[in-house]
Image 1 (spheres, helix red, strand yellow):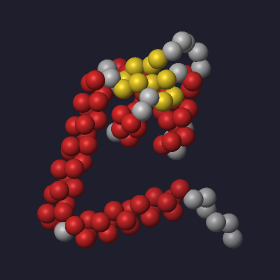
Image 2: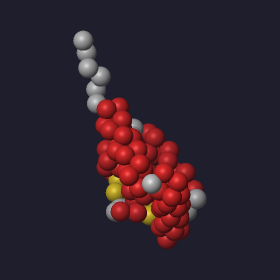
Image 3: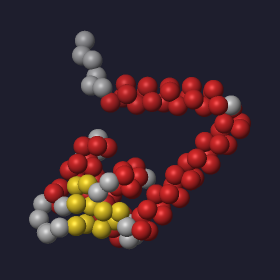
Image 4: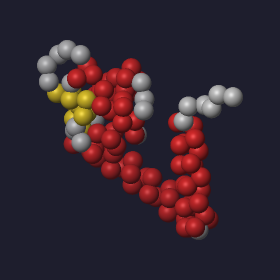
Amino acid sequence: MPVLRALAESDTTVGELAGRLAVPVQEIVRRVGALEARGYVRRLGAAGDVRDRRIQITTAGDAAAAADRHDELAVEEQLVARLGAVEVTAARNVLLALLEVADRPAART
Protein backbone atom coordinates (compact mmCIF):
# COMPACT_ATOMS: atom_id res chain seq x y z
CA MET A 1 0.00 0.00 0.00
CA PRO A 2 2.28 2.80 -1.17
CA VAL A 3 -0.27 5.53 -0.36
CA LEU A 4 -0.78 4.32 3.19
CA ARG A 5 2.94 3.86 3.71
CA ALA A 6 3.63 7.39 2.44
CA LEU A 7 0.99 8.78 4.79
CA ALA A 8 2.54 6.88 7.70
CA GLU A 9 5.65 9.03 7.15
CA SER A 10 3.80 12.37 7.34
CA ASP A 11 0.50 14.12 6.74
CA THR A 12 0.29 15.50 3.23
CA THR A 13 -2.08 16.76 0.56
CA VAL A 14 -3.42 14.82 -2.40
CA GLY A 15 -1.35 17.00 -4.73
CA GLU A 16 1.86 16.45 -2.76
CA LEU A 17 1.18 12.72 -2.53
CA ALA A 18 0.53 12.46 -6.27
CA GLY A 19 3.84 14.17 -6.96
CA ARG A 20 5.76 12.05 -4.47
CA LEU A 21 4.37 8.77 -5.80
CA ALA A 22 4.30 9.88 -9.47
CA VAL A 23 0.62 8.92 -9.72
CA PRO A 24 -2.14 11.06 -11.29
CA VAL A 25 -4.11 13.18 -8.81
CA GLN A 26 -7.36 11.45 -9.81
CA GLU A 27 -5.91 8.06 -8.86
CA ILE A 28 -4.69 9.38 -5.50
CA VAL A 29 -8.16 10.84 -4.83
CA ARG A 30 -9.69 7.43 -5.59
CA ARG A 31 -7.21 5.57 -3.37
CA VAL A 32 -7.56 8.05 -0.50
CA GLY A 33 -11.34 7.70 -0.74
CA ALA A 34 -11.04 3.92 -0.43
CA LEU A 35 -8.66 4.24 2.53
CA GLU A 36 -10.99 6.76 4.17
CA ALA A 37 -13.95 4.39 3.74
CA ARG A 38 -11.96 1.73 5.61
CA GLY A 39 -11.11 4.16 8.40
CA TYR A 40 -7.39 4.22 7.58
CA VAL A 41 -7.14 7.95 6.82
CA ARG A 42 -9.08 11.15 7.42
CA ARG A 43 -9.15 14.39 5.48
CA LEU A 44 -8.44 17.55 7.42
CA GLY A 45 -9.49 21.11 6.68
CA ALA A 46 -12.37 22.87 5.05
CA ALA A 47 -14.16 21.67 1.98
CA GLY A 48 -12.74 22.88 -1.28
CA ASP A 49 -10.14 21.72 -3.70
CA VAL A 50 -9.37 18.14 -2.61
CA ARG A 51 -5.76 18.58 -3.72
CA ASP A 52 -5.21 21.15 -0.95
CA ARG A 53 -6.80 19.28 1.96
CA ARG A 54 -4.42 17.49 4.32
CA ILE A 55 -4.70 13.75 4.66
CA GLN A 56 -3.84 12.16 7.98
CA ILE A 57 -3.37 8.49 8.78
CA THR A 58 -5.52 7.09 11.62
CA THR A 59 -4.55 4.61 14.31
CA ALA A 60 -6.16 1.86 12.21
CA GLY A 61 -4.17 3.07 9.20
CA ASP A 62 -0.95 2.98 11.19
CA ALA A 63 -1.73 -0.60 12.19
CA ALA A 64 -2.47 -1.58 8.58
CA ALA A 65 0.78 0.05 7.37
CA ALA A 66 2.73 -1.79 10.08
CA ALA A 67 1.10 -5.10 9.13
CA ASP A 68 1.93 -4.45 5.47
CA ARG A 69 5.57 -3.75 6.36
CA HIS A 70 5.67 -6.89 8.56
CA ASP A 71 4.36 -9.01 5.68
CA GLU A 72 6.91 -7.47 3.31
CA LEU A 73 9.75 -8.30 5.70
CA ALA A 74 8.47 -11.87 6.09
CA VAL A 75 8.52 -12.35 2.31
CA GLU A 76 12.02 -10.91 2.13
CA GLU A 77 13.19 -13.30 4.86
CA GLN A 78 11.75 -16.24 2.90
CA LEU A 79 13.51 -15.09 -0.25
CA VAL A 80 16.82 -14.68 1.58
CA ALA A 81 16.44 -18.15 3.10
CA ARG A 82 15.72 -19.64 -0.32
CA LEU A 83 18.08 -17.65 -2.56
CA GLY A 84 20.63 -16.01 -0.27
CA ALA A 85 21.14 -12.38 0.65
CA VAL A 86 23.46 -11.63 -2.28
CA GLU A 87 20.94 -12.86 -4.84
CA VAL A 88 18.05 -11.00 -3.21
CA THR A 89 20.09 -7.79 -3.17
CA ALA A 90 21.04 -8.29 -6.82
CA ALA A 91 17.41 -8.88 -7.79
CA ARG A 92 16.32 -5.76 -5.89
CA ASN A 93 18.97 -3.71 -7.69
CA VAL A 94 17.83 -5.01 -11.09
CA LEU A 95 14.20 -4.20 -10.30
CA LEU A 96 15.10 -0.69 -9.12
CA ALA A 97 17.10 -0.12 -12.30
CA LEU A 98 14.14 -1.29 -14.40
CA LEU A 99 11.86 1.15 -12.57
CA GLU A 100 14.30 3.99 -13.23
CA VAL A 101 14.45 3.15 -16.93
CA ALA A 102 10.66 2.88 -17.11
CA ASP A 103 10.30 6.34 -15.52
CA ARG A 104 12.52 8.03 -18.12
CA PRO A 105 10.97 9.53 -21.24
CA ALA A 106 11.50 7.32 -24.26
CA ALA A 107 14.43 8.31 -26.45
CA ARG A 108 13.40 9.56 -29.87
CA THR A 109 15.48 8.41 -32.81
